[in-house]
Image 1 (cartoon, rainbow over the protein chains, first blue to last red):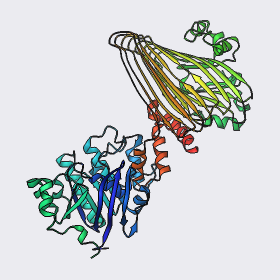
Image 2 (image 1 turned 90 degrees about the horizontal axis):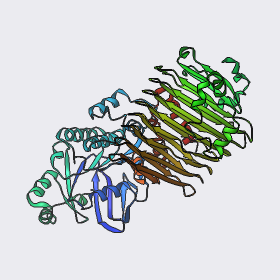
Image 3 (image 1 turned 90 degrees about the vertical axis):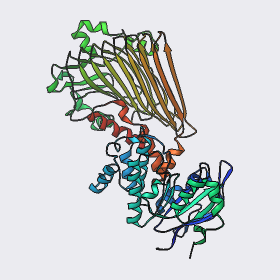
Image 4 (image 1 turned 30 degrees about the vertical axis):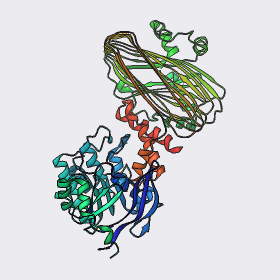
Length: 258
Length: 374
């Protein structure tokens, strides 16, 4: 699969509660690569990730999504998850009475009666979630604890494509290093791909990504190096950054299928 | 006490049904065992380790033994409260008398079973529990109707006294059948520094249950918790409430209900906390899930404040299972059915009952078995 695209999105338009949020978007994600998606608040980043995962309330009104060669445009959330696509939630729900340990075991394909292996337990410890696994999912978790729990669940699911919605927001420096480091380690080791939404550049210190892009006004504005994009955004802001680059640099969409 | 031992005569098939409602057959992890079948007490035995620490006999036998017991009967529950209390007052077949001796710490739970095996029977019992000063105990009561009995009713009066610095955790499991009519009438008096935890678990279909146990927190720093886990299906009518009257200085009440309604069941969850003392506090929490359009769920919380400084709060939510939670779990490779079942099992979280490990595992098994069978 090296050099192939894991995800191909063609002319995708998405409505949320009747309002058109994404307009005619075309792009692809490469296998074995991490991609960074920038964009101001309200630009449609979460909508994009949610539509890719097939979450309800995000209605695809036109276009198609193809994952590892399968058209998944009409597939359910569960089917997409089974195929190897996962999403981290920015604000995951609290589920009272359900222990995080049980969910983690289900993510691993075990039953709640099974035990964690030493290796799995070591990862739980590394994520500093040892005492949280016996608590109800997200109930009373801080922002950072939720993020760590989300990423650990995703890694346990052994996905082929990780869709990460601001894994770095609201986390302290140490947690960021931990989360981003583990994402990078997993992607590298498993040869999977990631699409990471971020507002900040700090995550780029840990996640090796060659591809970056800005989502603005429901449209893609694509560039190659996320670090450069981030520098430009910091200097010029999103609007100007997009203005100055959009016509001059190749985006992901021009590289698909080559 | 062994003169009442006729347990061997009860068919094994019937006894097995009591085991699925929390009764432990070999009595190893129980401090005492009591069986009242239809209209007579047939078994009451205290585990050797607990001789002298607890007393467990039929109420009628106890009345002959202790003259003073009369003072404890019809004191918290008014015999003229309604037609059901009057019927029990007129003619009753016994019940359990449980007394935990002063300072006794009973680590293993006491188990008692009220069993109906005859059709069209109206079982009428009168129970009295006295937790003497400084005692600590857990009681589990299983009310069971043999599944082959088409129709019956159960009227039960229970009066519970939790004296100074005593702690009593009382768990009642109802396992009736689709045509059982049930009217428990219970009340508790809680003394200085004493704590009473009253748990109610009803997971099986029933024709009609209406109950509204009351707790009178008269003691300084007395506390009561009412917790219930209710699962209504196949046309069951459950009108379940509890009432706490906080008279003692610094007294506290907490009520937690989890209710699931489906398949034509109708559930009304009531709760009343009345603050009659300036420093008292209360909280009422009711959460209900409606699984289909045929069921009905109503939450009626009532908070009454009569003194300045009373602090009583409530939160209630009834409705459908959160789609967001289902979707979240589906992104973790669970099917919709698996997600719903996981949420329901979590919703019926037995840890709200504050049970010791031995009972916690037992009740969890009962709750999960019923939730999964549906």
